[in-house]
Amino acid sequence: MSDDIQVSVRDEDNATIIDLVGDVTTFAEEAITQAYQSASSDGAENIIFNFRENDYINSAGIAILIGVVTEARKRDQKLLMTGLSAHFQKIFRMVGLTQYADLHPTVPDALASLNGG
Amino acid sequence: MSPHGNRVVELKIPSELGYEKIAREAVATVAHRLNFSEEKIEDIKTAISEACTNAIRYGSGSDSRMKVVVILTADDQKLDILIKDPGASGVPPEIINIPDINGMVEGKQRLGGMGLYIIRELVDEAGFIEPEEEEDDGNQFRMVIYRVDGNDSEPGASTPGTDNGGTT
Image (cartoon, rainbow over all chains, first blue to last red; front, side):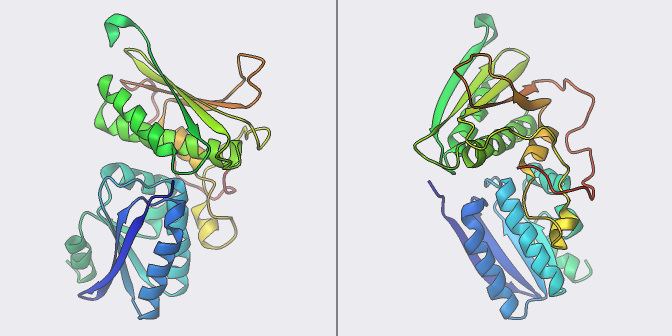
């Protein structure tokens, strides 16, 4: 009973945005990892993971994101996350993920922060 | 619901990842009927997802021929959730560690081990219990969440530290 996640990569201003639509669970690992690798191989320095509010994220999905954080640190990339519901912002803070990725409400907010806004 | 006392909903789901979403939707429906706040409903949904995922992955080895049983008992004040699995992984952990994200990022800890910690932070009571009936030889994990805050601790208040990496 795997649920598809749709992951797409786009560039905007000085960031690469990875849009995630669907459940972020263990089934999402390949899609998320591939999207991140694609962004990195194109030289992305600022990567925004844009979630769709109210999608299901579980601890296995969070572990995938921690894996991305690990790679991003090695590459000296900046990670930002947008679109998370208040609940998942709380969960991300709870597990410490916000030590490694800045949370912003929307993609424009994240882009503004990168540009000193 | 109150004029009629407790309401009990019992689900039996295949031990296959993804089916925990059925428990998630069911508990949300019950919690809405009990007038839990939206924030608490989100907490309960995440907690039951994590507990069912543990039961599927560790309690029954993701063997879809096995079943995970979820029993939701609701009254005016609280929602009592019992999750039973066949106990394929043996004795469940007694200690719930704070996830060490720094250790994970530095490659010193394995990724994961956050499920039980998240559950404990989100609900009022959580833990494995001894089965009441002798024929129940698997694991039973119980969670209780009160409609109005029933404890002094704020969920999410503790800070992830640098201890070892968890149990799930």
